[in-house]
Length: 176
Image (tube, rainbow, N blue to C red):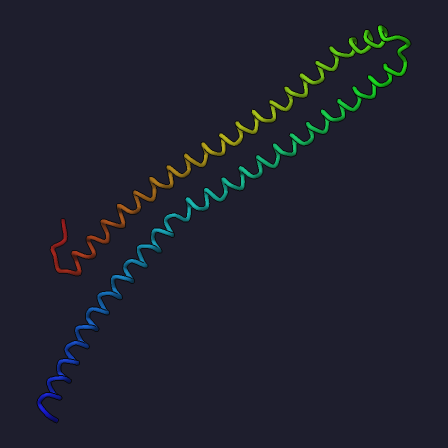
C-alpha cells in the first residue's frame, strides 16, 4: 500500500473517531434533554389533571345552569300563554270598549308581578351560576399554587441531588 493511501486511511480513521465522539456527545445531550422534558411533563401531570377536572366541573355547572334557564324560560312562556288566553277571554266577553279597557287594565298588576318574579328567578340562576364558577376557579387556583409549590420544592431537592451526583462522578469532594 502506498504512503498516500496509508495517510488517507489514517485520516479517515481519525475523522471517524472524532465523528463518533461528536455523535456520542450529541446523543448524550439529546438524551439529557429528553429526560429533562420527561421529568417536566411528569411534574406537570397534576396541574394537567387539575385543569381537566376543573374544565369538567365548569361544564357541569354550565349545563345545570342552562337546564335551569331553559326550564325558567318554559315557565315564563307558559305564563305568557296563560296571560294571553285570559286577555283573549276578557276581550271576547267585553260588551264595550270601556269595559275591555278596564278589564285589561285590571290584569296588568298581576302580569307585572309574574314578569318580575320570572326575571328575579332568572337573575338568581345567573348569580348562583356565577358563584359556582367562581368557586371552581378559586379551588383550581389554590390547587395549582400548592402543586407549583410542591413541584418547586421537589425540583430544588432533585437539583441538589443531581449536583451532588455530578460532583461525585467528577471526583470533586462531597460537601460535609
